[in-house]
Amino acid sequence: MQEIKLTPKSKTSDVEHEIKGVSALFLGSIGTVAETSALQLEAFNSAFVKFNIGWHWSEKEYTQMLKQAGGRRRIKEYAAEKNVVLSNAEIIEIHQCKTDIFSELLVKREIKAREGVPEIIRNCVENNIKLGWVTTTSDQNVKAIQDATSNQIDFSLFSVITTEDDVQNSKPAPDCYLKALRTLGFDHGNAVAVEDSGSGVSSAKSALVRCIAVPGKYGYLQDFTHADIVLSDLHSLTLSR
Image (tube, rainbow, N blue to C red; front, side, top):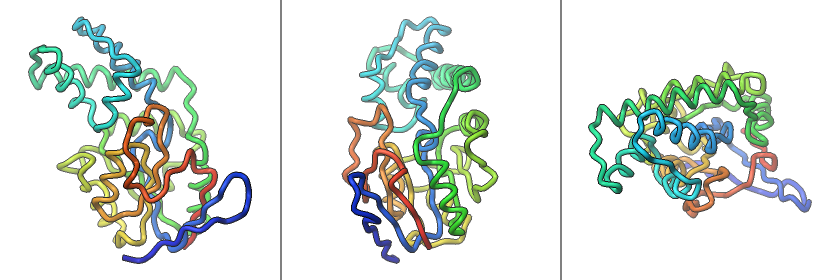
């Protein structure tokens, strides 16, 4: 695997980093583009009200749930914990309701791209580094985030965007990263991933892709020990080929 060197750019109070030898940057989940965890939680709880099942997830509970990817999985496991019998069809229906509500909330609320994301995209364009958005969320969620941040991010600059429809196994499986690498025709050693969750980091690392962790608001309980570096945001990062 090609070595990617990480070196301090300058001696400032805020350490800056430069990664050299990069041909592709992959942003991971929608949470790497915009901080949406609070809206996701609000959408889940609103869906539970609509289905009259008497659930209300607290921020603390949801933070624990985010250790593993997958909204339908969270509903299924919570139902089992509460001894509530839900069919697969009911789980899918509740989750679809949540997704619809989430899309509506993104239209109503002002959503900002995460700090440093527009800048790192510009950095990649200027250095002829390919861009990818490597998620295993729904196509509906991806399009909703695109619409909500279109005034800040030009998604036509991305050479590959994956969703749950593109892979057999969701994160933490490496399928989405392997597909993105195949699509671009790049070796894993030429790519760097940005992830905001432990499962996302595991997905990238399982594909042998170097990974920068940028934890989200609700990500403080997650395990980022396998990330190559952990940053609070992408302002301190520059990439070059």
